[in-house]
Amino acid sequence: MKEIYDMKGVGCSTREIALRLGLARNTVRRYLNTPEAVLPKPRQPRRSKLDPYRDYIDRRLSEGLENCVVLQRELEGLGYQGGYSLLKKHVSPRRRRSQVQATVRFETDPGEQAQVDWGSFTYLDGKGRRRRVWAFVMVLSWSRAIYVEFVRRADTASFIQCHVNAFDYFGGVPRRCLYDNTKVVTLGKDEQGQVSWNRRMLDFALRLGFELKLCQPYRAQTKGKVESGVKYVRRNMWPSMRFTDDADLNHQALEWCDVVANARVHGTTYRIPWEMLAQERPHPGQLPDRNLLGPYLREDRTVARDGYVSWEGSRYGVHWKWVGATVQVGQRLGTVEIWSGDQRLAIHPRAQSAGQRFTLPGQWKGLPRTDGRPQQEALAVQVPVGDVERRSLEVYDLVAAGGVR
Image 1 (cartoon, one colour):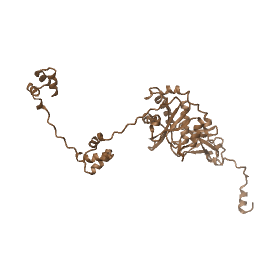
Image 2 (cartoon, rainbow, N blue to C red):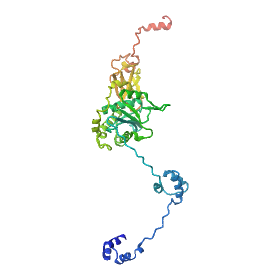
Image 3 (cartoon, rainbow, N blue to C red):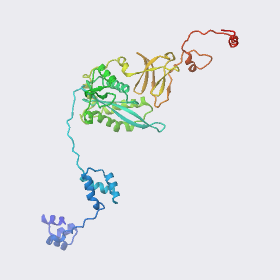
Image 4 (spheres, helix red, strand yellow):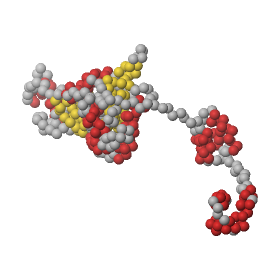
């Protein structure tokens, strides 16, 4: 009946109030003359199923238990028959409010820093099996330019290879790279509390002239730019990825970096990373020739007698003349390359599962056939062992009879 008093306050007559509100004039007069008569009677509060357990809930909350799933399980053991929503509604305003910790955003100069991290991604292959790939993510701290590459193994060799590809993509080497405490970078601390670096990673960093730096343990904000980058890959790129093999996956990842991630207006800088990267490129150091980085990017393997190199559970072919030789195997953007020093012997698509075999076109070209057997079977006898004397079969009969020594 607040409308009656409001309208009376602005000078409306009893008749006008009755007409506007659809009430009888006597009703309007009664409300105006005896306002206390229209006050609603207080309702009796409804009894809640939680009422018998309020003291128990308050005690458990004071002890630090705020998980409603656990609370409901305990209450049901005491006879509680209410629902989860009722309990949650009661507990929510009584929870301790977490204190939001303030932090200062740390910005760097162009070319000063890159942040690096791994992300794990799963998918179903063509046979319905769940598989996993690792996403290497590097973000330049000033421009927010991002590089993404997917690999099968999160090991040191793959980590270094991804660094080289990222530096190629960005057009230079930053002054330092920031990591979490992953084993591909650090093995922990020694007795004096000094960082024990992964020797191969440290040699690689010294070779290229950038500094390895670790973020504070349990402080993800220290490298928040790449943490956000991994989340961005997971939410923006990965849901729409459909690929046939690793090379196709990384081709799409590069395209996403080019036309989506680095072409958008960044939510923090309000600038386009590509445009900022163009200003940042003169600042980093130059990437050495790839041939000088070979020892960091490849692993030694021996070519088997059948002309294949075993690597990661699959086999990759080279020309038969390299049987028995030590070669170097490396991966790049979903392909496997086999080298001997500065000479690349073969390039194959990377296997999607263990047990695959990849034959090099012309792998057995020039291999002499023996006794009409296929060239593949003749591989085992291709290594020269000297001339063998040819004898008549009658000679072997004499040997068996003891007549020839």
